[in-house]
Length: 99
Image 1: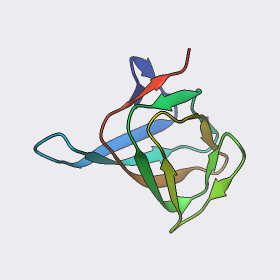
Image 2: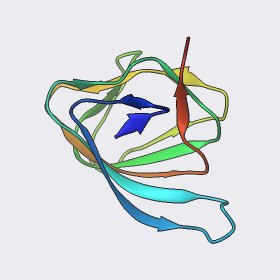
Image 3: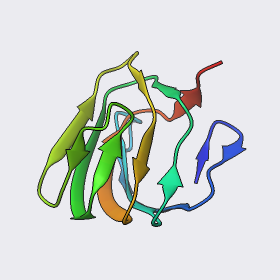
């Protein structure tokens, strides 16, 4: 998985579906145990539905199975998973690294 041109070790994704007009895209995201993302910014709103494990945001707020995380367009954060997790992600565009 990548943010911009940067490869994210320990992150995996499988495309699910895309809207024909480009309004949204969806994919399964898996974070291996210990995975960490760098600080990045969301170009459009992103919704994550955690289905397995625990997803933790950079502010140390944790989300488990059945919980939803929403990042507004223009928001920035980092994330990690101590035990690993799987989430369904729906967004319009990809994120970019914060410089």
